[in-house]
Amino acid sequence: MSRRMNRAGPLVLPLLLFPLLWGAAALAASDLSSHPSPYLRSHANDPVKWRSPESASVEEARARNLPFLVSSGYQSCYWCYRFKQDTLMDADLAEVINGSFAPVLLDREMHTQDDRVLQAFMRDFVGIGGWPATAVVTPDGVPVMAWTFVTAPELASALETFSRAWEENPAAARRLLVPRHPDAGADARSGTGSSDLGELLQGYLEQAGRVSDARFGGFGTDSKYPFAPQLLALLDLHQLNPSDAMAAFLRHSLDSMIAGDLVDPVEGGVFRYTENRDWTGPHFEQMLYTQALVARLLFRAAMTLERPGYGDVAEGILDNMLARFAAGGGWFVSSLSATGQGGVNGEYYLAAQQDLEILLGESWRERVEIRQQAGNRLLVAPVGLVAGVTRQALVSLRRRETLERDGKLLLSWNGLALSALSHGASREPDYLQAAGLLADVIMKATGSPHPGLLAGNDAKAAPADLDTLVHASAGLFDWWQVSGDPAAISRVGQLLELSVERFFREDGWTRAPTYLFAGDDRTLSIADGQLPSPSAEWLRIAGGLKAAGIPLGPGTGKVFTLMTGHWSPGLMQSAFFHPTLVSALVTGRFLGIH
Image (spheres, rainbow, N blue to C red):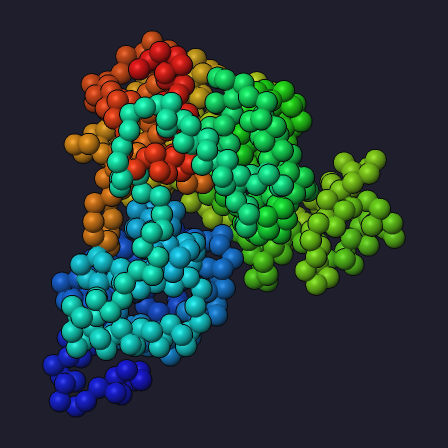
């Protein structure tokens, strides 16, 4: 019996705790062992009786006024793995959670909108986002307290305190907990609007300049993410109106990114981010979307900035994607795990010093550059005249280990992969062939009136969200530009229309329904994250159809006119977070299509 229950007085126990105890007992956890998410499946045998958000028991818990404990993560996340091992496997904590909450587990790549709401609340309440993310959520869908990585005793104590308050007075429990950082975020729905494109462009450039890192390139002075949408927008703007200063910043950023540890020096894949400002200290998981976006960025930069070497790096990224992410049948899996078989962060990528000595001989230090050291394990880059031979030897050393993959076939991220392969198709026949195969299966997956979030056997597990429809259409649009396939461009128009039909209401976009949270996320201008904004990407593709003389569907035409003539309030204040929209609007004005 938990400590919270021991403190309850005998007279109030039947009145206050019986409904909760009875409700928790009746709400059997859903069977996660057959869920399409590998992340949820990995928690099927936890002492915490997790249920998926799709489970019928979620509605039962809501009907019984049982608060939720919601946790979000993903399979390739190292800290999600550590959170499970160090916190969630604690038996005392599990007793507290199972006794007083309905525990719900999210895969941030499948339960996208619930995770976005949770991340927004994390930024308000904790001051940062990220994964794992855990929150207490009221039965009517309002988050009230949240944590990133937290120990089992700390979490148990906080949950017991909340549980007592909730039992005594739910309304008062809500008021006890308020956001600590109410000004966090970049919400384009607040503030006053403007329709002056020159002013918006100037605002974007000024804001980008303020957060740019003059010393190491890129944006920010802490952990370094690629910020591919921002860099792609700067490339577009430089191409339309060449600027020596902008070109210099772009070259410096890309040179620093490539010279650092963001790109794996052995196999060529791109890590999600680096821990340090100078692009060192990689966070070892690799995401399909990062491979696709950075490859596309480098292919574009190779031409626009006249740096052929960028294209060579992009080819290395795609080669790694074809080798490590391929799922068969043309598809690609969603990510490669940061943890090895022993649960060590980066274990696959870090070579033991004694293995390097055996593999490369006594002069091994002359054949590699040590990029990072963790105990006796090293991240190394091949150097010298025989770097190619050394690289192959290092690859063979790595392949002795098993690199865990999240095998979900996300239609959205495969659309991004198709775009990247299409950009590289003129350079390498293998990319053209892979793009053709992927385009074929995306065409089949989107041929249904009700496309799924996932492809393959799991296509019916969840409906497609806005990001899925838009990124699939963007991939097919880029494939059409390479192949001239009339079926592909016809499907692009259909997907743009379907996006409007499913996700545009009155004067704004929604991205997906939520399972757990209350509220309306509707906005005309969705911000970019590490992935392009679906609303801005939709506008870019619709503009591409118009520029090619292809008529827009009725819904598409109406929304296109609205988005090019009216911008969300607050957009001027957060222009840095809307680079794809800025680029689409400026390009459309340049081409005279609006």
